[in-house]
Image 1 (cartoon, one colour):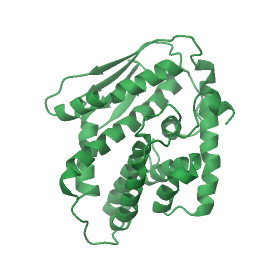
Image 2 (spheres, one colour):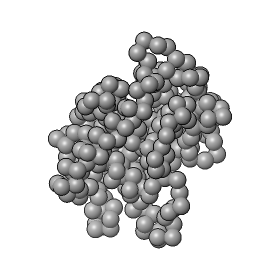
Image 3 (cartoon, helix red, strand yellow):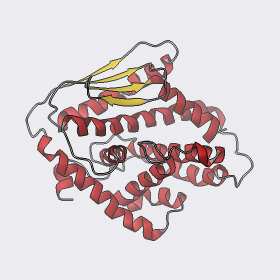
Image 4 (cartoon, helix red, strand yellow):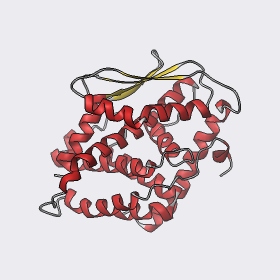
Length: 284
């Protein structure tokens, strides 16, 4: 794909077969989420494990989203439009690329599902609760933008996901251009910072101690989520200064990049929030 290929971006990664299971589940759940059904069937003994997987998939996506902010800041990249949308696009492009983890398909689907169900809950609460002034696009917009990137990258693999979101065939075809534009744009901006044998600064991963969120800390570390993302950007790009990826307590469900501290912070509370959302809103 031209410049996209040069930066190692833009080649879809579709080596996770479980996305088909997730797609069928989504297709079943969406009508209920929109108020068209009265009850959901019991999900059985695996519900807690599914909730943890959902929380960890969100952590993967969130890490790459924050890496988008890191790139904008550290490489002094220009951004047209919302930086949050640009960071979403970077996360999608990285997770659809050849270096993505085997569960990247599930990560993308879960990210879209999380925004979708949160949007449903917010909309039911009332239009006044929608954050029109926020730096991020509305959750429902982020969900459909993510699905568009997915089906644009690989219509055969992600077509069922787009169908489950009621995205018509014409729009799905248009998404190929949306994905290609994002992949080429990010590749061209990052090309001057490709490693190509040059070694940049390192990324240090830190897990702060916690009592209240120990299960999430342990799961993040066991899965090596921050380590995998750190290794990927270390190997592909020349970072101008040392960076820290830190998982910690923040007293809020959040994640952010601090240019002052050269640090991406992932809050344990965010994992708890996504875990709870799965159990209460998506699988009750």
